[in-house]
Length: 495
Image (cartoon, rainbow, N blue to C red; front, side, top):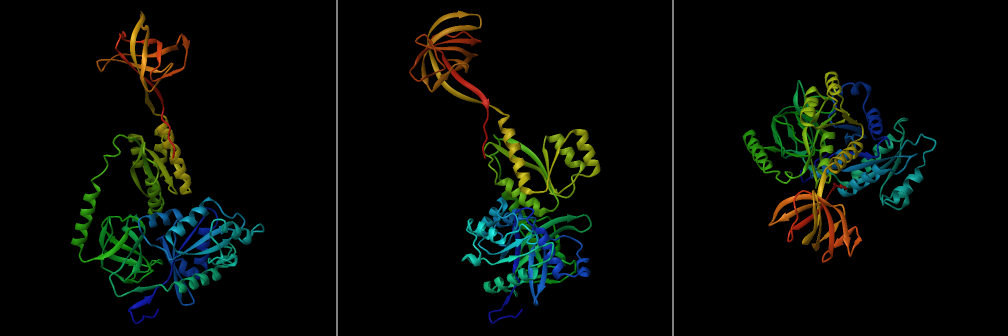
């Protein structure tokens, strides 16, 4: 990489791989790793840090290894400009699917360059042209149909088309003229976080500009720290990281959130003061949920990148009538403490690629706590929507109808009266519930067993109608009393 007259260097492109579940995103990433990283080198990869680098034609490419476009879009929603190029993976034998469309939407909203990888072309039923035509209907138009998006045919299992895909990435990157200032304090994006029992809080940072150095003080919105150790994606210790380089850092005093921006700060004291200020602002919360029904949940995932995506999607759910309260969330196995909390609080446990420990599984069985486990984020969210709907619609709510002013009492017996009156607002229904008011106080409760107008049975009456009713209930109705009609029904909930 050559430095130009403006103190800029050309930086490697950052690439994210998106597409429908089971279309081969992970297999394609693995094929790229196998193609450019030798077996000996691969053996050195001791942990998943959420990104890796490959080198081709003496040029580097950084791949963001997310669990899918859910995590990528969660980063983007926090204002994180993560990738320069998106590879849309579409299976040649299946074509456009729901998550394909969502990935296209994400690419367009991010306004980044795209490359189409038509995968699984080793299958007999694969049809690249059919895929291109279907994508054109989604306004995702490849070059040979008159658009601007290059397409490459691949087979992750057969390792074909991989070199061509990498060469296409370099070509698209060259056209973007990706430059960066290297002689500045670093700033960038958090792309993965987790807690290691031996190493403590570990975060994978993607440097977007400048140079990150060992012992720099770094800060995000939610965490800060002084870098004690930096490692590349192979686990090798390094002292500096330049733009577009993913690096695992140790030294955060708390765990930053995936998608947060980071920058270098002057001192740890200044960084800590900033974090305290942010936490103080966050405490000014949530009177808005006090009158809502609360659905309590516990979420466990394999990595915090997935957790961030799930929490973002939950935040975006319609919650006008029911609020979701996440009592506990984190990455790692489901523990006895998780199950005990669910039992004590009535919370539901949702798992994404996280399994319970043996003691936790036994306790869940004993306490009859069901753990809802998923391998696809959207399936987890869809089930959560169903649970929300069930919770809301299990609630019985009151709906007030109209009022009847009593003009005459015709007959009084034990627990029943025949009375007549005028509807003074709304409408009243036969078989509706009734509250009897006298001088604004409730003196009886019952229901309308029969409703008549001009000696004919009717089901409802509206304002200004004069009707007679057979009232069954407590209290003795007198002339001048007001009868409030109402019904009780299950609440309806729609997303």
